[in-house]
Image (cartoon, rainbow, N blue to C red; front, side):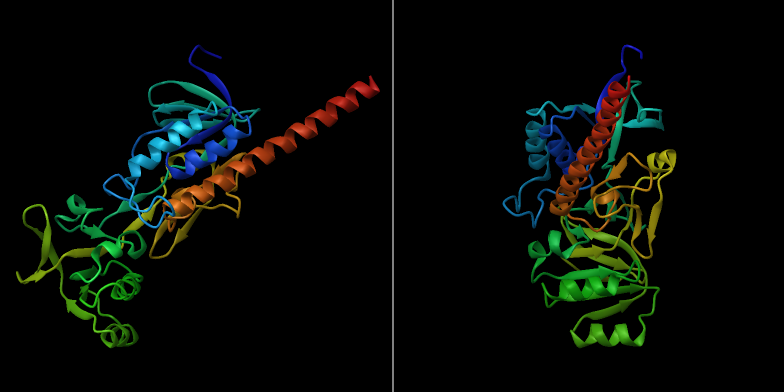
Length: 318
């Protein structure tokens, strides 16, 4: 072991709500835990997080700061870095960070979140998390009664339009080059959701505020908010390195395959949060991290019991 290499019970990769929640449970169980966090949370563009009981409307950064302080109180180490390589060893796993530090751990929790693949329309990325949104439960209340357009990006887009129709009577479905089938068109029209066909060329922004979208014909549709369905992808680099199975969700994205407690298809590795379920909001991710942390601790306890029994048997027969 070199000077930079340290041994931990658990390596948590990712310091968002899922990773910190897992670390909290494990720290309280007196496990030695390292959280490696690159500092790139998915919800960084958002000024507030919603639908988190007792934290509704709080800045996401406040939750992470509080979580870091809480886990540190139980002896959890946190480093601002990212994992470049990870491999299985005879006793667990060895991980090397981009800065060159190496850590050994008996177990691993992947809480790396996901990447939103945005539609290739000028202006969307710059407004993402502000007035370009995707989730009615995360952002819907804030745009209630406003002029909302839903950009068709996949098979779930018409469903998005119906969800946002609950929040505003002024919803437009931007069908793009697609042609909604008869059933979809009837359902949209029945709830007074206007259907506009043709491509969207760009967003129109005035005084740092979305005011509309410009169509391919040059016409401008006035708007206050644009809803887009992203493709949500859990990073593949570490799962591929570990040999984890991935699940493809048609029309939605890709996630690590796990069981109800977050265990992956590789013994010793758990995944939690958006890495394991792209549909999760912040509160769900925190809950999933809690479950995964408890499952990891129990797995190590079972291993320790098995070793203790073997040692006792060896002493008895010696």
